Each structure stands twice: as structure tokens, then as C-alpha cells.
Length: 112
Image (cartoon, rainbow, N blue to C red; front, side, top):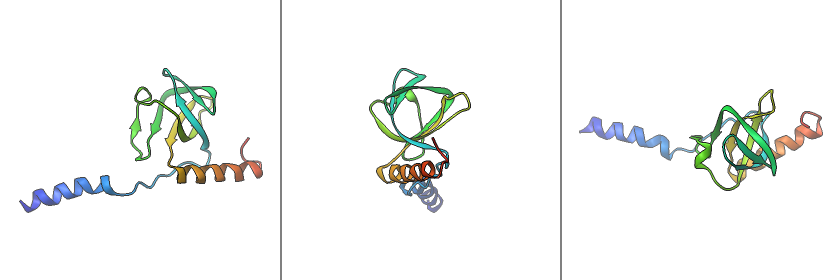
């Protein structure tokens, strides 16, 4: 019985832990609104999700585009063809950090 109790605690423990995520420095903040895959909108502009695009929710779980509706604060990375490769759905605090980082990069000439 003791072994079963220890295993169940270890399985449940990660769900209760705070998620620490690494969002790449090149990620850009925006407002994401999914449409019929592979179409979507970021900041009101039409975009295309690339093949194999990954959307991570606030718990860093992958979400399917068809399961989403509404508007989301996100950070996103574009591929070499301009399509969206990765999207991170952000909490308000995460969004502020990414937005400040992007603003600082624009001031220094790093982002356009």
C-alpha cells in the first residue's frame, strides 16, 4: 500500500507545481484569434499557421487549433516563410514581460 501512495503523489505533484516556461527571445507578443485551420489572426491581421505549428497553453500543454475560440494574449515565432510556427498562450504577467522585452529590442533595433 505504501508504494501505491507514493506513486500517486508523484503523479499528482507535477499538476500542482507552477509551470516555468522558456519563451524564446525572438518571440513577439500579440493578440491571437484562431480561425479555420490553418488560418488565424494576430493583432487583427490574417496569418497562416505552418505545418506542425505548436500552440502551448498557460500550463505548457499543446492545444489543437480547432479546440480554441476567442482571443488570446500570446507570444509567437514565425518561420522563414512568414508562417507561424509556435505560439505560447500567456498569462497577464507573462505577456507584460514579453511585451517589455519586445519593446526594448525595437528600441535597440533588434525587432521591426
